[in-house]
Length: 132
Ligand SMILES: [Zn+2]
Image 1 (cartoon, protein in one colour):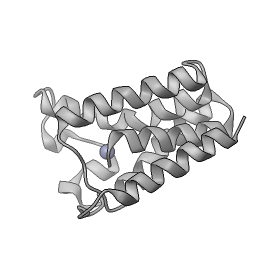
Image 2 (image 1 turned 180 degrees about the vertical axis):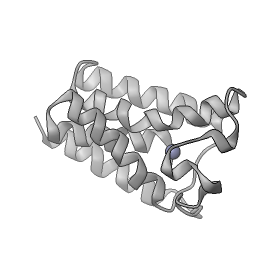
Image 3 (image 1 turned 30 degrees about the horizontal axis):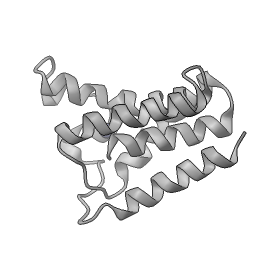
């Protein structure tokens, strides 16, 4: 799943839970669900700045000490093992997150379009905006 989508879903969970620790844990758990959905990722050169901008946007909007921010961080933490693999620190078969193992056996199929991901993102942003 696109990193920015993971972050906005995690942030929405944080806005509901209102507790940073619970938000972080729910964010990590949400990664399984969002990775399982059919989706289409971007190249790393697009993913990284989009992810950074989304996290910065959540921090600017709700604050870096908010449950929204920590839900977003929790939601993207599992993908650190992709980065570790890309820079050669771990092999593909050393990944441990359920949706990243077994050659993507539990990972969602590749979608033809990205609009469902946009809808998930917009729904998550709406939840964040409506919660105080
Ligand atoms: Zn993932």
